Amino acid sequence: MNMKKDQSKTPLFDAVTNFVSKNPTPFFIPAHKMGRGIDPRWLDFAGENIFKMDLSEVNGLDDLHEARGAISEAQDLAADAFGADHSYFLINGTSCGIVAAICTVASEGQKIIVPRNAHKSVVFGLITSGAIPVYISAEIHREKGLLGGVSKDKLDALYAENKDAKGVFAVSPSYHGVCCDMQGLIDVTHERGGIFIADEAHGNHVYFNEKLSRGALALGADCACQSIHKMSGSLTQSSLLHVKGGRMNLGRLKSNLQMTQSTSPSYILQVSLDLARSRMATQGRDILERLIIMSNAARKELSALPGIEVLGDDLIGEAEIAGYDPVRLVISARKLGIDGYTLYRILRDRYNIESEFGDYFYTVCVMGVGSEQEDVDRLIFAIKDISAGYKGQCKPLSWDEALPPTPPMIITPRAAHFSERTFVHRNEAKGRVSAQMIVPYPPGIPVLCPGELITEEICDFLDGFIRSGRHFHGSESENQDSIAVVSERK
Image (cartoon, rainbow, N blue to C red):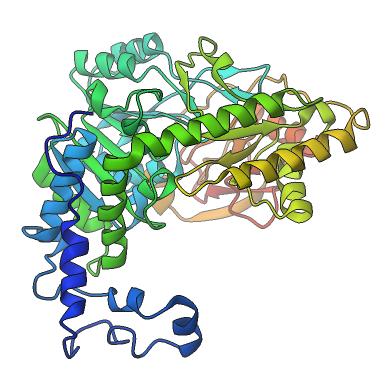
C-alpha cells in the first residue's frame, strides 16, 4: 500500500487526551462526569482514564456526523491507509455500514445482486431499503462441506437476466477464510454498469501484508465495509466504511449513515479506530508476518494428526476458491466422528480455549494482533490430546445431500418483515410465505429467505435434516419444529 500521509499521527486520540488533561468542570453528558459517577467496583477494575475518555461532542472533539476537525483528519488518514478516497468511522459495527451502503445503491423496488448466504445485516439492508434481492449462490465444496467462492461467469449470466440491477454485494474472505475472485466479480459488475459493495468484515488486515489476498479497494471496489475490531485491533463494535471512485452517491451515503448510527457516538470506539489504523499502517506488515508464520506452522502440525483437518491453500482452485486467509485456524475432527459444535465445546470446557464459532464440520479459531505463540501452543496441545483420545472410537461424519431448489420470492424481504406473522409447524408450512431465514449447516446457504414460498421440497428437506440430529440457524421460535410465516395467505 502506497501511503502518502504520516500514519504515525493519531489526531482524534490526541484531541481527546488533550481535552482530558485540561480537567474541565463537566456539565455535559454523560452523567458519570468523566468517571466520578462510575460504580467503584468497576472503577477499581478498569482504572479511571478510560472513563475520562467517554465524552460527547465537546469543544475540540469534532462531530462524527458533521466531521470537520479531528475526526475528519482521522478518517482521512484511514482512507490513505486503505487506499480509499473517503473513509467513515462506524460505531454501530459493520452491520450499520452494510445497511447504509445497500440503501445508497438500491431504493425500494430496485434490484441488487446479493449472495444467497448473506449475513443478516444484508437482509436488514433489504428490509430498510425495500430493494429486491437477486440471489446468487457460492459454489459448494461438497467433500469439505464448505462454501466456496462466487463464479464471475455465474454473476455475468445473472446480470444478463437482470440488466436493471443497481449493483452487487459480495463477501471475501468468508468466516471460514475462503477468498473469492473479487477482481473478476468487480470487473463484471462495472462492465454491467453496477456498483460493487465488498463485505470485508473478516478481511481488513489483508491491506497490510503482501502475502495475503489483495483487498477489494485495491481491486476497484466502490465500497468496502470492514470490522476493524475483528482483525485489526480496535474495540468491539468499531468498524470502517470506505468509498473509492465516483459511483457511490456520497451525499446519500452520509445521510444513510446518520440514519443507521447513534446520535451519541462513542469517543472510546472512535479513538480505538484511530489508534488501530495507525498501528496497522506503521507496524501491520511485521505483526501479520508473525501471525502468518505461527498459523502456518500450527496448520502443518495439526494437519499431521490422525483424524484432524485444517483448511488451507490446498483449497485454491476448487469450488471457485481464489485464495485462503492463513490468519485463522479452521479445524475439523469429523474423521474422528466429532462435529464442529462438539469440538468447540470440548475446547472450551476441558481446555479453557474459547473458539470463535462451531458448525457441523468445523471449529473456527481466529488469530489477531494480540495472539501469542503460547495461545497457539495450547491449541495444538488440546487438539493432539483430542486426536489421541478419540482415534477409532466414532464413525466419521459425512455430508453429501442436495439442497432443495431455491423457492420463488412471493413478496420482498421488507414486505415479509413488516407483515403480521405467526408460527406454524414445519409439516404445516407448505404453501405459506416465510417470514424468516432458515440456514442449514453444512453448507451454510439458506434454503429459505424472508418473502419466499415454502415448498414441499423444503418441508421434506427440513424434516430429514432435523431427524438426522442436526440443526439450522435462523429460527425465531424456541424449537426447530416451528417456522415463522406471513399470517396472510398469498
